[in-house]
Length: 543
Image (cartoon, rainbow, N blue to C red; front, side, top):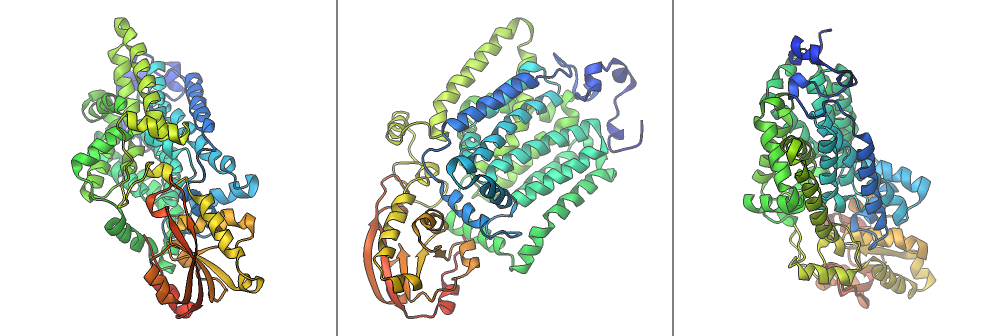
């Protein structure tokens, strides 16, 4: 055997002698992970079927309820290709730009890729179970668990960087596991590519990288750090991420300002107990025994020595997020796939032989509880039916931000009100004379409103909206003077301080939208008291 990163993990001669043809095709070494019920057995057929089931589930709701707030913003970002944005790296925007150019910007066009990414995550979760030594049942059950997770289902419903984040974490976990057990150098290089793309998609992949390092240091795999391969992987990741780093430098590190403001002004404080409770709910309570068993197995089982880094990685990221005190529940979600895979392996071994009837019971319980939780993650129900369903189960709308809630949780409320908004703005804009329309700008308070006006209003002849929120501010005030402006919302006194003449001309009404988007005034302002070049720095809002 050649000297490479896997040398410290080389299988003992006795174990090598027992290697089967199946293991030669790439299954996890028995010496590292212990005997399994079906070592090296492929379950790609069942995994593909489960992935397609997940895809069908997402497609069934693909046009409900309407554009999500972030989708509208992302579509505008895609019209401004760059190496970075105030609130995110560029990869998901680049991908959306390609989708938009090929398929358009309909709900089906932009939501198909997230649905496919979610299906891929299900398949890869099963493959992680196989790498851990799981047989067909373990692989299939791990994939099934990944299907019923509400935070996964909800994330995969609309276009955002988060669906790719989950997929890239899952692929990174699979590659890290293979690299630590098989030790093939090219696996480390592939891991570096995945981590680099992950960083280019979402900066929180830094938690994954730091967690993996902590996991390797705290496990028997630490000797691999004496080789060059993990460091080459890190170098590749940094190289791929460097265009965004350069963009940050050129623009004065806007994302750091955004993160400070979001943490201090937007995100609600969450206690450690509250964070853990939210994890249980977001991952579906029925999966709690599964991922807890997987975590314990990864941390303490002798058979899990080469995979221990994944368990430590989960703990390290969880501790970091809890210590922060203002983390979203979804930030830790991608780290659960390895726990599902390990937990499914534990269940498979515990139910071998006479106890196999328990497997059918476990599958049935997961399916039933998954169905119960499904309407809270995927908008399959008509909105009024959903409201009655949630009330029956005692589930009040909630958010992780400092907002008053309405009839719907925020992930659903943010899909309502956009057409009503554009209707009112169009009415105000078209009440102007042709001369005023030629000079008129439209100003919105946040990127959701500005995105809706820019994307949906384009079909109605409206000019692109301006806003001080995040990247809209960075794009600037445009070329119009602002002497005539349609203003969406905002504080009345603030608006009066800006214009010599201010007239309220409409009200946006949508009972399902977030409360701060309901009964929202529409103004026409004339005669700026402050030149636009002086006003623009004042309206900046990175949050």
